[in-house]
Each structure stands twice: as C-alpha cells, then as structure tokens.
Image (tube, rainbow over all chains, first blue to last red; front, side, top):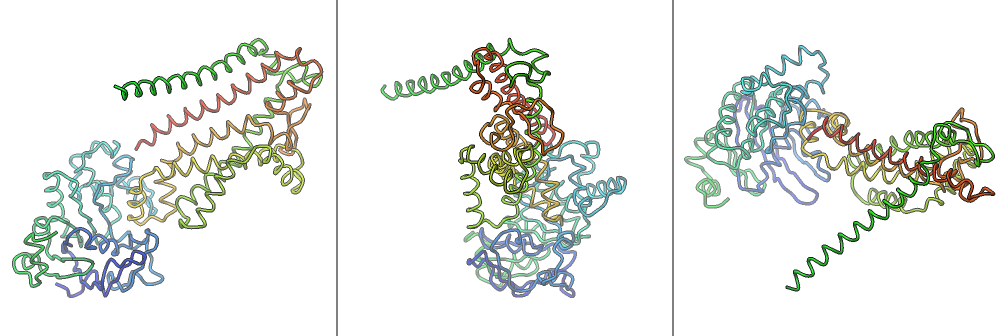
Amino acid sequence: MTQNPKIRIEHLDFYYGRLQALFDVSLNIASNEVTALIGPSGCGKSTFLRTLNRMNDIIPGIRVEGKVFVDGQNIYARNADIFTLRKRIGMVFQKSNPFPKSVFDNVVYGPRIHGVKDRRILEEICERSLVRAALWGEIKDRLNQSAMDLSGGQQQRLCIARALAVDPDILLMDEPASALDPRSTAHIEDLIGELRRDYTIVIVTHNMQQAARVSDVTAFFYEGRLIEVGITKNIFTKPTNKQTEDYITGRFG
Amino acid sequence: MKNRLTERGMYAFMRIITYFIVVVIGYILFDIFRGGIGAISWKFLTDSPRKSGAEGGIFPVIVGTLCLVLGTIAVALPLGMAAAIHLSEYATQGRLTRAIRLAIVTLAGIPSIVFGLFGLGLFVIFLGFKASILSGSLTLACMILPVIIVSSEEALKAVPRSFREASLALGASKWLTIRRNVLPYALPGMLTGSILGVGRAAGETAPILLTVAAFYLPKLPHSIFDQVMALPYHLYILSTQLPDVDAVRPMQYGTALVLIALVLGLNLAAIFLRIHFRKKYRW
C-alpha cells in the first residue's frame, strides 16, 4: 500500500502567526486510493489539506515547518514551483465556487491559463472533463449557459470538472458534499468511487458515514495532531486508539 | 401611544427634509435652465467669444473643458486604479497601508484652491510645464485621485474571495487571477466611481485658475502645452470681470447651463456604463 507513497508528509508543523495548528504530522498517502481525513471541527484537517497544494500560502503570517514530498519532491523547498504544483494537485472547495462565466469558460479556465489556445483542443478538454465529472449528459447542450444557472449539485460537479481539466494526478476535496442535498451527495460519492481509478484523492469530511463509504484509508485528526491512520474498515470497526474510538462512537465531536 | 407619534413624527420630518433638498436642487436647475435656454443657440455653441467674452459664443471654452476632462481621465484613471489594485490585492495590510489610506482620505478633504497652488508650484513652475492643459490635467487628477482609489478599492473588495481562490488553486499566478477573474467584475464599480469623480473635476474653478485657464483665448489648443479657456472659469469672468455684467446675464446662464449639461452627461454616461457592465459580468 505504501510502497512508493504519492504524497509523503514528514513532521509537519503549521502556524497561523503564533498559533500552532498542526503538530508533528507525519503521513503517507498512496496513489489511486481515497484517503479520508476525519475529526471534530477545528482539528486542523482542512488546514492540513491545504498544505498539500500550498493554498495556505495566500494567508498572510503563516509558517510551515517540516517537509511534504509529492512524487519524491519537497514542495516546500526554496525553489519549488507553486504553479506547476497547483496544476498537478486539483482542489474542490466546500462551497462550490464556479466563476460567473459560461460552463465552457469555467471548465477551460485552467487550460487557458496554462497556455492552451486552440479552440478544438479546448472543446475536447471540456468534453473529457465533463464526462469524467459525470456531468456531460446533463449539460452538453448548455455549454454556453452561465454556470450560475446550474443547481448546487451540478455546480459542484462543474467545479470537479474544472479541476480535472488541467489533468492533475491528485485531487483534494474539502467537504465537497456538505452543502448538497442527499441525492447530489450520493452522486458525488459515486463519482469519487470512479475517479479513484485514475487519481489519488484526499477528502476531508465531517460525515463519518461518508468516510466509511467512500475511502480506502482514514486518518483521524484531533486538536492538530494525527491520532490514528489505517485502513478504513479497521478504523471504524477496531480502532486502536481510545480517542479515535470515542470520536467514532459519537462520544464527542 | 407616544412611540407611535414619535415614529410618525420622525418619518414625516425626514420626508420633509428630503423633499426640501430635492426642491432646492430642482429650483436651481430650473432657474439656470430658464435663464440659459434663451442664450443657447447653434451660434452660441460654435462661435468664438469676442470682446473678452461679452459677445460671441463659447466654443473654445467648451473644447477647453473637454480637453481637461480627457486629460484628467488619462492621468487619474490608470493611476487611481493601479493604486487601488495594489492596496487591495498585493500590499501586506499593516501600518504602511493604514498610513497610505489615511493620506488618501486626508487628500480628499484638501480645499481645491490648495490643489491649485500645489499645481502652480509643482507643474507650472518647478517642472516648467507652464500654464497648460498638461498642468491643469495633472492638478485635477491629483484632486480626484482619492475618489477614484476609494471607489475602485470598494469595487475590488466586493468581488468574492472564492473567485481568487479557485483560480489560484488551478495554478494561475496572482496577476493572471486578477486580470481574468477579478478586474472584469470590479470594472463596473471602478468606472462608475471614477466618472463621478471626473464630473466633479470638470466643474472645478480654483485648480484650473492657476494652472491652465486663460482669460481670453479664442483659439483652439494645438498641444497639451497650450493654455485653454474653461467653462467654470469663463463663468466666473462673465459674472464678475466684465464692465456691463447685467448685459451678459443671458450668456452667464447659458454657460452655466452648458456646464451643468456636461456634468450631467458624464453622470449619465457613468450610469449607462454601470448598467451595461452589470449585464455583461453578472455575478
């Protein structure tokens, strides 16, 4: 499972100014698996997720210590290329945030940013990404419509398509279904199941049943520390740590 | 029961004040319109002034004001918008940015005659531009810079953070993100605020008094280093500097009417631009 981990986090400490949010986190994330990050509110799981594609860099005053290796390269090295990193690691946010442009312009925004100009290539990318995000059928005749006219579930799938359009290897999802109704949530979960074949997925969720349904590996965070990580089935049936067990059984959080 | 009366009383009071303001403005506009409409004619608008402005038209005066408006736009808009983008998107918020913002707000409160003297000292004399469209535009630009910066910053702040985040997460650089995903949506607000500022500049007398305005120059300008006549200053001359002030009363009203029409026109342009962009960049 962790022969050659896709992402290797070593002794990661994270500070918002003087407040430490992550304490000595070490974790391996394997390719083509879904890793779920669970834990109560404020435990640092979203902060941790965002260190993987350096999205925390846009917040002023943060400090990162430790190393994060993606495909063997430390992304926090001094001369690391953030833009290529963010191209290789896609992100889907909690509240879907499509741009107020057409569906087509949303999906091809990434490729355009990276220099693709040929209309035919863009159309191909658009179709391929929407197919992968299980949205093509519903939307193929409405590519020029504004993305703001779509339903919540469709918008989120559009955001997934948009992230896929730049051809990443890794997908980070921060509670992607928490703002959606049960049916759309089920769609997204099915989608994650299919995407795992081609992508490495890390998903933050506060919904334990979702973590159990969707992931191969689960990591439990509490107050900025990684408490336990293991195969999902084991975590949920026979956790080795008492705190994990308390959280899973609903004693807190 | 007492609450009800107070409630009604306050409501009526505020209503009366609002109507009063509208009535006063309406009366001023009506008076100018009534006094000036008689003087407006094709000849008035296209002829040059004669006898120091006592006779003839105000064509070069209108052209002068238009030149100044264009010059001010050319200087103030890019500078103001760039400053707003820097303050809002790039600068680390701290003591320095607080000081800058304080300076901008203070600048907004400085009397226009002080700007005129500043322009005289810096542009006309020190930099040697002499009394010219260039000096006048630069001075007016300084004067309206605070308005442009503040309204542009507001417009930029109104664009949701999620637009920027999603763009950055796709691997875009900060500038690309701003150019493609923030500016287009902030532009309507930026333009509207800016044009309103320019409208104010068009009607100012003190700054142009010392930096560009000519008493009597019935020729059209050939370059930005030329002096020009301008509507606000011309109105002042017609009202106070000519021997037979009563005889030129119609011309005073006519000039005032043209000036107000110009400013109104600019404001209307701002409204149209805002409506157009709002439709185009709906979010």
